[in-house]
Image 1 (cartoon, one colour):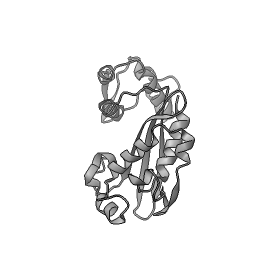
Image 2 (spheres, rainbow, N blue to C red):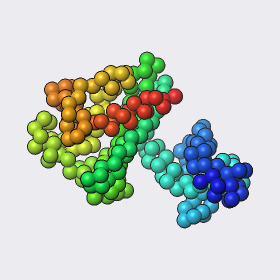
Image 3 (cartoon, rainbow, N blue to C red):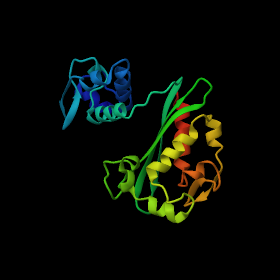
Length: 223
C-alpha cells in the first residue's frame, strides 16, 4: 500500500497498511469511545477515511469504517477487570476440504503475577454457510453444535459452541500461561481437545488447538 499512499500525497513518502493501523491505534489512546466515534471523516473509496488536515490523517488515511465499528462493539462488550497487562492474539487456519478460512481471536488480561484474570475467545469462519457477518460466538445457538455435543455424551444434554468457549475462558482464570499451555489433551477430529475426565472437559470438549495457539500469541503480545 505504501506506493499508493505516497501517490495520494497526504503522508510524506507514503505509509504501509500496518503503519497506518498503528497510527490509528496510537491516536485512539487516551480518548473515550464517544470521542473516537466522532472522529472527523470524509468520503473515500466507498467508505470513510480521516478528514484531510486532522491529527489522525497525518498518519492514517485509509478507510476506517470497520475499525470504528469494531471499537464500538468492543466497547459494548467491555468488562471491568484489575489487570497489569493485556494482549491479543490470532491464529488463522485453512480447511481445504470445505474450503474455509478459520480465524481464531483471543484477548487476555493478566495480573502482576502473570495469572489470567480475563480471557475472550471467538472464531470467524469464511464462508461459514450461515451468516458470514457473524462470528461463532455471535451465532450462538444458530451455530448448531449442541446436538452433536449431546450425542458425544461427555456434556449432559450437550453444549453449544459459545457455551463451550465460555467454559474455556472461565477455565483459564487464575492460571499462568504455562498452566494453560500444559492442559491435558487428547487427539480429536484432527486436532486436540481437553482430555476426557479433566476439569476443562466438563464444559468444553471441542478442538482447542487454535484457542491455545492464539492464547499463547496474546500472552506474548501482552503489555
